[in-house]
Amino acid sequence: MESVTNPPFRKICKRYGVDVLISEFISSDALVRKIDSSCRKMCFGEEEHPIGIQIFGNTESSLREAAEYAAGTGCDFIDINWGCPVRKIAGKGCGSGILNDIPKMVALTKSVVDAVSLPVTVKTRLGYSDEDKPIVDVAERLQDVGIEAISIHGRTRSQMYKGNADWTLINEVKNNPRMKIMVFGNGDIDSAEKLVEYKKRYNVDGILIGRAAMGNPFIFRQCKQLLAGKEKTDATIQERVDVCREHIAGLKSYRGDRYALLEMRKFYGGYFCGLSNFKPYRIRLVTADSYEQVEEILSDIEEHYF
Ligand SMILES: Cc1cc2nc3c(=O)[nH]c(=O)nc-3n(C[C@H](O)[C@H](O)[C@H](O)COP(=O)(O)O)c2cc1C
Image (cartoon, rainbow, N blue to C red; front, side, top):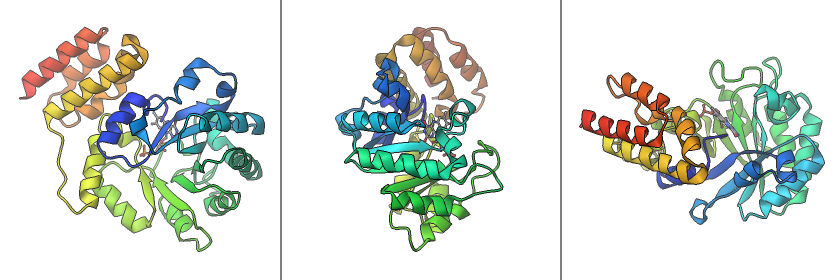
């Protein structure tokens, strides 16, 4: 996830039990031009395996070249993003914009499969518009050109993030007798209980958790606990503060103080979700303008909530 699954946060998620990690999405055009900020997104640590590098683009030459370059990092698979709904991406025919042109989607995917010896996977949505959701056919066609797994977010491009994710079509893809590759479901999983229920109900090979993990990597531990038939444990306040500190420190050494300060703002709500009367602390955290101030607020939180 863009600006979320960078190395410091992935490291934490891994420790909490994630099975498979995927990089932020990376522009294939930018990789071809060796743009620093994009190349840096391909960095990962040894402990992160299995990890996929996710690329997006809309031309055969850039996608092929980017895939070859990404494969050279030693990652375990290449994931193609055919799911991003954001206008500046989809409007150019990248991400979920390609769902307007399925033959091109299939051809571009095949060119990536042919370009690298690593497994290639695809992340996509049900379709472009709410009137046409061709995912069952699309999944088969992508399988036929050689992808090894498909992750499906149960929304259309037009839906963006509105409404509820529809998992019934994901289930149809999985139950299609012609499908042999792994089918992963995605959309609106916000608790370990829901993950367990959806895994069973929709019969998928795996589940991707997005927004609910932001500031809540503990959800992966809880999922693992429930899947193993154990009781789930909630993170203590001390654990939340400690992991939040670790996350900030990681971002700081990854990209510097300013970056850490700004990027962390979207995580505080998750780290401290459910704490009573937390709002004043949250406001202080998201308006803090130095790393030292953040440290001070975290100490205040520790003191206040213990
Ligand atoms: C801030 C943000 C960044 C995202 N970046 C990516 C991305 O780079 N690649 C991708 O495949 N999906 C990306 N997504 C979509 C999520 O992976 C996921 O498909 C979507 O949020 C639905 O799952 P959820 O309900 O579990 O969040 C992003 C979502 C958000 C909110």
